[in-house]
Amino acid sequence: MKKILPTAVILMSAISFGAMANNTHMNMNMDTPHNSSPMQKELNDSMNKMHADMAKGMNTDNADVAFADGMIAHHLGAIDMAKIELKYGTDPEMRKLAQAIIDAQGPEIEQMQKWLEKNKTNK
Image 1 (cartoon, one colour):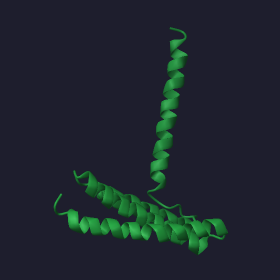
Image 2 (cartoon, helix red, strand yellow):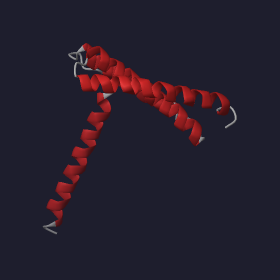
Image 3 (cartoon, helix red, strand yellow):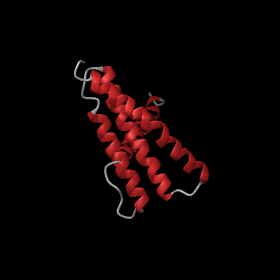
Image 4 (cartoon, one colour):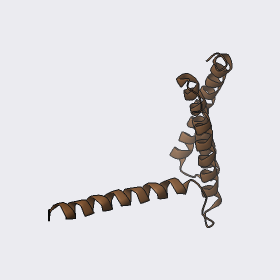
């Protein structure tokens, strides 16, 4: 019994800490701190929009439609973030990657949008 109590206390502390950390992480997306830079505000706004739009895409029982809707929102979020990198970033490697993301994901978005036009009403 003497060994169980300290183990239980450690376990409960770890669970409580994990719950608090998860709650803090989840709340980070809700509001941008008042002292954040314009770049941080733009990134937070784009992330919040992407998550909200991805969640809307999950309101169907059709896996194909949910995938396409969710991925369109995800890709649009990636493009928004890449544009923010091009606006504020200075590292040549990261700027090149940001442009590659824009170039690659635009056509994928178009492909999924066309697929949805043909298939969303039928599913």
